[in-house]
Amino acid sequence: MRIPLIAGNWKMHKTVAEAEAFCTQLKEAVAGVSGVEVLVCPAFIALAPVAKVLKDSDIKLGAQNMYWEEKGAFTGEISPVMLKEIGCHYVILGHSERRQFFGETDDGVNKKAKVAFEHGLVPIICVGEHLEQREAGETNNVVAGQVRAALEGLAQEQVQKLVIAYEPIWAIGTGKTASDEDAQEVIGLIRNLVAEMFGSDAAQMTRIQYGGSVKPGNTAGLMAQPDIDGALVGGASLEVESFMGIVKAAK
Ligand code: PGA
Image (cartoon, rainbow, N blue to C red):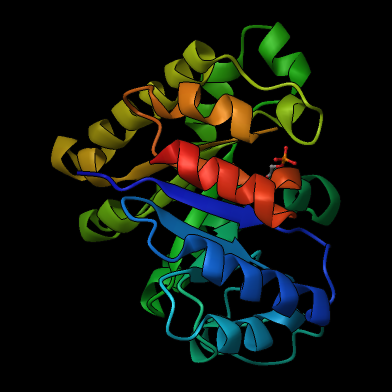
């Protein structure tokens, strides 16, 4: 049984004080909610303070990126050891904004995913096509290529714990969501590919989220699809009310 994961990707939003205030409120709002896993992914500097606020709650903490080395001369980077020490459970890898603005590649995402697992972090690997690729009928090829490359060389036990987020780039921050059926089609294809690579038992355990303009109003339809196991939420994760609307609709 795959428990849906609702993850808030705050991107470059919220100061430390704002992040603490949000999580204090969220903790109260989430108390008593079961059947769905809730995750927040603040900016790096807010991770440690937020970890303190979330202590004694079921809300999980995740980072938005990391580097693949444990330590060393890598100015500006954050290591998996550092994330683990402050209580991160998840790390988002290969978000389309990282690929677009910061030169992340499939190969880098693959290296990071392996290292994340070595350090006890669960990667959330993001994949998704551009609008031109969708219009040219290339969606399935593009996404399959990203998934193959990112999962290359992982172990079956790792893939069982892994989270993949299918985020069509044209749906991120645009207010345009993929239809429930289109999202299911691509996510079903991802699950088949994981089964081909790692066996169907592993593929039945991998959680695959949808991301891209998820809101309280469109969550239930997406979550009703057989292969969609939660959402990676940007804009609507920044207010407790809308984030909770999504959490409740995902149950
Ligand atoms: P959005 O962002 O919900 O604002 O579209 C999703 C994401 O980038 O993860």
